[in-house]
Length: 409
Ligand code: HEM
Image 1 (cartoon, protein in one colour):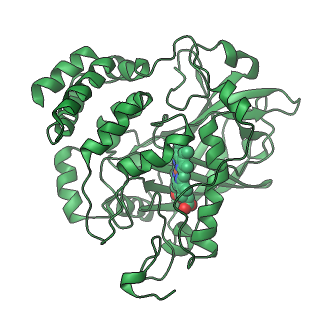
Image 2 (spheres, protein in one colour):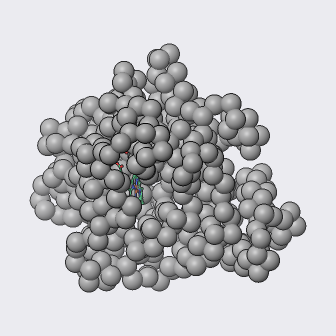
Image 3 (cartoon, rainbow, N blue to C red):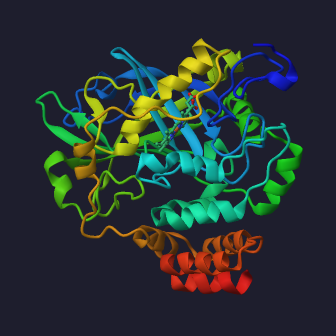
């Protein structure tokens, strides 16, 4: 394979000659530690979560939509990947800054990527094809919760420090007596959560491609070490069947009124990488890398991820001159068990939690900003039928919001 600019395979950085990520291409991170502050040994025997334990960690934050060196402030869902170096080996919690996801079936994932990922073949900035994006979201109404989240303030955090992190999937914890629990992990920012305005973004987009990365580095350099409190929501294994929402459906969260969060520990980032490429970009986070006492739930998206990532790691870290794999290998697991676990529960509905987000979590100004952004998404649509369908999608989220959007679009 020659290394000329015109024949550089996808996934290689022509200048540096190192492999860059195809997914979650733009990112940055830091080293730190995780320390246990509360006793959760009744729920897990994992050594990393035992009282008094403190382990080194590595965190990589990333954008999902853009490409390598695209501005990191673009509206997006952000990766929040945590690696715990435990005495039982590495444990990776490869999550996001969102507690939910667009899809709950991995078989549609490639279509999601095609619908919203920007692949600039010529290295120039690509533009979203909003018609294509909305056709996908309309075909997958289970996306409504994540789309509402994304077009609201949470889609443009003030910095990586001012966002929460989530394991997003449901995981299985097991204690020393062999009792099992379903668990959701949430990292709550001690800096608080805050967002940028559309005006901030317009300025930063042009001025500073690595704004978040710079902010993180500067904060750590001045000794202002960002920290997050890890909480878990814990459900007895036997209670899952009766829960009003399917607890393995990643398009839904577990209402804290049903399952209150339990504090576990504190994640602190206190050291910048000396070599960004070697320490952060060459890091490999694998959703299937667990330690005893922690394991997967029957969430089929998680199982697909457990199988898929190592292929990309081999391409990126081990054999950077091989052509990049563009599809994920078929997952190997018990299809029947995963299908059984995916059945809807009593209150499951594609729009119900998106509506709750709009009506009970957002305040009036946040709802207004969401309406403005949603209207900006509708105006450029070329297909007039699509405009009506998008407004109907919003009506199913919330009638008042949909009227606001229609008035602005
Ligand atoms: C079926 C659905 C999904 C598939 C097939 C998939 C696939 C991938 C692949 C292949 C990578 C690149 C790995 C690498 O180069 O190291 C990646 C990166 C990543 N994915 Fe996913 N993904 C899926 C859904 C998700 C979900 C639901 C989350 C979060 C809950 C997530 C979080 C991440 C993160 C944080 C990274 C970047 C990790 C890093 O910084 O190295 N992905 N994904």
